[in-house]
Length: 525
Image 1 (cartoon, rainbow, N blue to C red):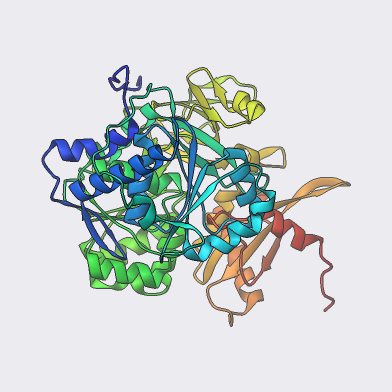
Image 2 (image 1 turned 135 degrees about the horizontal axis):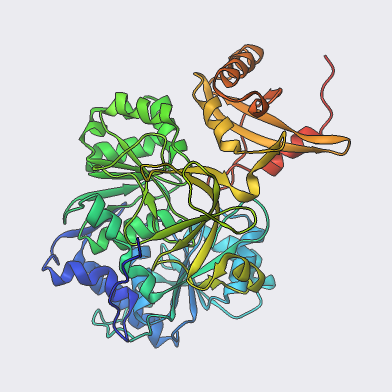
């Protein structure tokens, strides 16, 4: 199906597109944001965004100059982000948990003129100041200070009435940095028109209504909650539930009990934690209308366990930082456990083999190429990567998929993570999710270990749910399960139990650290 292209005016502004639909429907007095400090209505949020925009404009911030946010998820972050877009500047929400090396790199690469930070983050930025290669101003969210400009001081004389800067639909609007597991972060450059389709999944598939409450467990610097929460949720007239700090199952349980969200957006790892700690058994979770999962594959066993505990289905989907929104989804009308879903009507996905030839037969894995209005324009200062990933209107996702005769799509893993075993391609995720079906396995990760004298071997690392489990018994149980469900060449002979599977701050498994473990001497005994 050919993607439906939205009608776009010759001049527009993405900031207006976020709050404009709700305000146009007369929803100004509805609650837009709930955070740790209280609530803001749509009218109040619009006025606060206007004050941020006017304040930055009065200080000389020009269209397409960058403004970076290292803030807690809050009404201030949402308002400042929208205000930045409305004056034509480029908004960048970045990870407060990032290591200093990556933070320094992104500040220098973006040349952000203004950095919004929490008071507890000032020292970290000041420590980096001698190595930051351009002048910048810190704006601190927190108590008044004579040392730095506070948000209160920034907004003191700023008008809430803001005339937005007309922008070309093809001008830069916001960047989202991809985390990855190795290498430097890279910025996906999104344009003003990318935001127009952000609400279609919520509006058309999930039937989100004005006033419904949305809780995203991931933070707003991720594309997943930024697009489906801040952009799409507000475009639908919904209420965003925001919270300080890194998400924990306990805090999520408290938020569900306190605010009774209608929709929960999370990732499989976090759904599993909610189940393992008994938090999902709370009656409040039975009041959820819709649960959405993305970020990694959702195992069938986890889908079933969640349904048994809450009575709710999890609607899996897949998207990327580059696509902004999900492009293959399960919905309340069409849901199949184990499948990534079906392609949304406003996207087109094609598969190619390793030689670039199109794949048109079912059940044949290939690399996915995507065409959709929200795909980013390029990677900032990454010409080689841009050429590799983008070909005209098509984006090479780097993900391996297959589809069946009924139009269901199945994610097989990343093209650069696939393993060649006995002359056949194998997806590590297939092995990992089979291992995760075994009781008492909390995490599983497969790595490939090259050998100079023969074919590479694969090693399966397991993290037990409880530290006092017998590691040998657990490894044996997993090996027996793998042999009963997978072809023999897919079954690792080497299964190792470790205390914790290492992950990045954004939740991705750091497989290079696991490979480093294999290089260490094995204790005798």
